[in-house]
Image 1: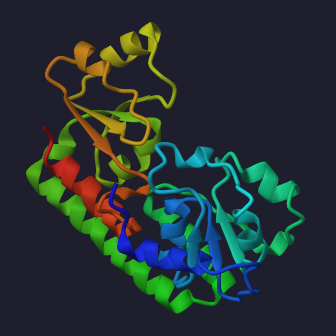
Image 2: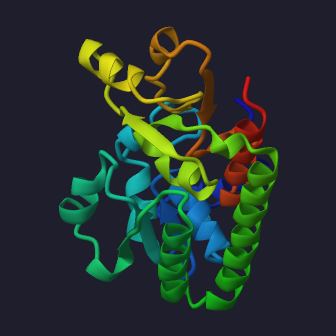
Amino acid sequence: MKFPSVYIALLLVLSGCGKPAKNDSMVVATNSWTAAFAQAAGAKNVVVLAPYSMEHPAEYEIRAVDIPVIAHAKVIVFAGYETMVKRLQTGMDLKKEALLRIDTDYSMATLEKSVMEIAQRLGTEKIALQNIDSIRHLISDGRTQLDKSGLNSTPVLVNFFQVSIVKEMGFEVAGVFGPAPLEAGDLAKMAKPRSGMIVDNEHNPVGKPLVAVKSGAVYIQLLNFPGMHHTATLQDVIRYNILQLNSPR
């Protein structure tokens, strides 16, 4: 996988030998998604713990090399679903004020709330507000495109982790499936609602069996974590997802 160059540059803070010096601006993010929120908040010096190549970034375990970096961060941004959360909260003797838990989805309300929570810790509210405005316009333009094409008039079946962006784009959610693999009862339940599109989560797709029970429904996958398909920022992921919703196959 080709990683976004912006994050390769950010990871250069890990180079060098020995214990890292105290860094009053460094932000540690648990994965590429929390890192993208930090970047949107105005953070310039971000270290991402989970590799972009991980299929399930939330399952990343803290390694020995991560410990001095985490210990010397100004802010550690996490979302709460990561395997490492318990260790961060109770197993590393970190100052409580260094930890910042945020929500991560692509509803405009969550994007604004979480970006500003980070910005307030960093004192970067001005740039955060500019980025939020950019994201708001991007979502609005995407919704307008779908309104004009009429594609969002199609009821959809949606993976639990992609409900937020689908709703922002004006789709009617006919049913929500996952994140666990679908069983026979789930398939029978999802077969009942009228729907013309199945929207799955590319990081952990479980919806393909629905294609067999929803004749004629289009199947697509959307992103959450930046990194795949040349995405690096929240805006990149939103653009990519809008493109997929506008070009159902």
